Amino acid sequence: MKERRRFIRLNSAISVNYKKLDSAAQEEEIFSRNISEGGICLIVGDRLNEGDLLKLNISIPRHRTIINVNGRVVWIREIPVAAESGKKTFRAGIEFVGIDRQAARQIEEYVHSSLFDVI
Image (cartoon, rainbow, N blue to C red; front, side):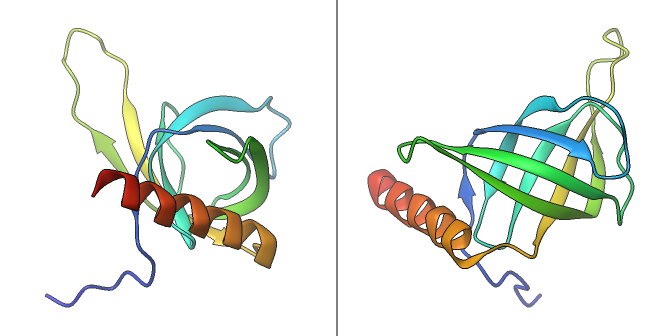
């Protein structure tokens, strides 16, 4: 199977505030599963739909900065949980939309510098 990813991904639980662009709901704080220059995988309690547009505020560790970017849900998968909890949780693959160069560079620097810390 051919690898389709264009960017290096870093497994990293970073804080993200998000909300649907077409929603009046308040932002919700969640955590990522991984991040790359092109997108982010989020752990969410809401069932999002493919194609949903999100407003994301991503807290980049070490840089002490928040990156504001829009994203599009490209896939969603339910995470199996213990039946007694009854609460559903999902992984959502988000592709950044219209990310500016500075934000992309900050994410790229975070990903690459963190990978070298692991090695």
